[in-house]
Length: 213
Image (cartoon, rainbow, N blue to C red; front, top):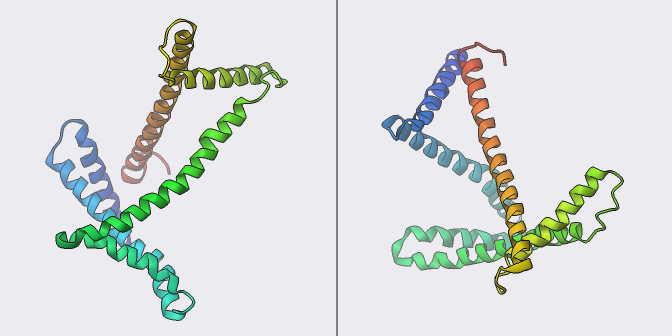
């Protein structure tokens, strides 16, 4: 019986894979059915995961075992209930307070994180002597880092008209930005191709058995 369900799962996964990829031809009922099932299963999975992995160990158990020592956990619980009131149109305004609290907290946390990783670390990497590297490849890389950072910042300086030497510098910054965007797009495309390879390995290996695992 266990083997039957394993085979059934493989066939269902293969059929849903073909249904999803059928969108490459055009939007069709097979894709819509697979999409809705995927969304429904994801919602159900994350609901159960939230209850058993977050709410029970972090809220229900601490409050039931020692309410006096863990009463502060009632604050996020009340905020969560207030957020759910958005489902009731007559009092949906109550949900604005927890939403504002979440957005404000998230903004503060991520501001410090990005300030350190994207600003301070970038400035620190730029404020170096690019000729200190022993290898000429390292020196060229450090020079490109310094030139790219400075010209990129100059491109986003719009208080001065981009003409003359200033305009040439800004144009160099555009080239650095285009290379950066191209590398980011290439990385994204590579990630998607990696997913495609995974699906092909599943179809040719687990489903058809043509290739080994």
